[in-house]
Image 1 (spheres, protein in one colour):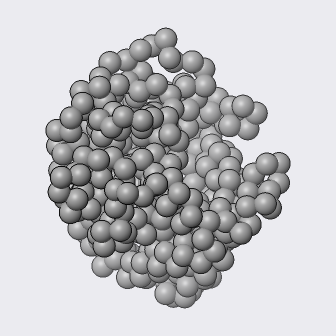
Image 2 (image 1 turned 180 degrees about the vertical axis):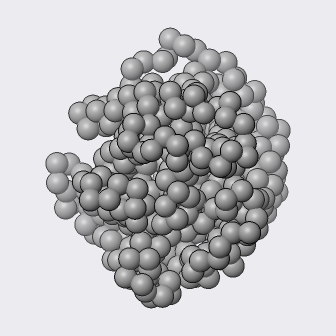
Length: 453
Ligand code: PHE
């Protein structure tokens, strides 16, 4: 039996996988993935993306799991324990900072999603409107997005405060299967729309002439963000893993679930987009918020109520996905404060929520009243996105893979991977090769591209 410590633990293996998959599956899959697939040419991009998930994000995820369970600590504590006195501890602080920044801007988009769920279910996304105007007038409204942002952050806060087993595990177990269920229903509905075949072809017939250097790098960046790799989020979650949790197979399951959800989101959106004239695949970030209400209305023009239900379900799905991710971002800083300053989780969580609310308000206002305030052409929202996802995540993942591949005692790495000899060592050399060479080099390329591209 394992010694009981003051830290929480996931009670079941299913809880471990669902909570980690919940962190990975989010707006990155359902909102960002279709957007980048649309921008980067469809099927060929997806194939490249799958390669990066397997060879880059998966090994770094195992590295994070390994560091978390080995140290039984939040991300800063993990570096302090595993690399005491080393400047690498800064990577942990970078993760905490990135978690707060991502949560701040992520909650803004999640807030829009909440509003769209509300609009759909109250039958206010009706066919006569110009959805581009509906969207821009909502995001530039000085107070409405703030209300939904606050609501979303409070929801996240409430779940995090309930702790690991009662909060994160319980809600992940409920939300993840619900999410998968809604996705399957929506995929079937989408596939039955008139003209859906064109969308399916776009997703299934690769055109490799479209694979340019920038497409390859975009695919790599998307794999990264989508799997929550590089900022210690999964390190924090894995500090709650049991000694019997299988790190490699858990990481594989998480990658599989994340990828299935992302690809299925493509199968929800593209058949729908292609089935309506005048809607373009490369509509960018507006794809979900501007295009789909129009698509829902057109498709269900005979029975508008069905359209409202269909779109309500879709946006609800987005809120649920965003929530399971946002609690993992929140947990990075909450666990850090609670562990480091011996605070009650409740108090630590309040500080994190308050900081994210203030920063989130700034991000939200940058779409409306603060639109004019830019630095190097970017507003607050863009800066947060840039600093966290494009700077902190690649730096974090680079150092995580270098640390586990080259610096961490290899006996400990082997023990963690094999659960102290209980599991076969078959995959150990493959993992070592990926962690030592493939992941750091891959991450370096993404990073250099993001920085100088
Ligand atoms: N992976 C999440 C998504 O796809 C985003 C995320 C990034 C979550 C970093 C946690 C940490 O939406």
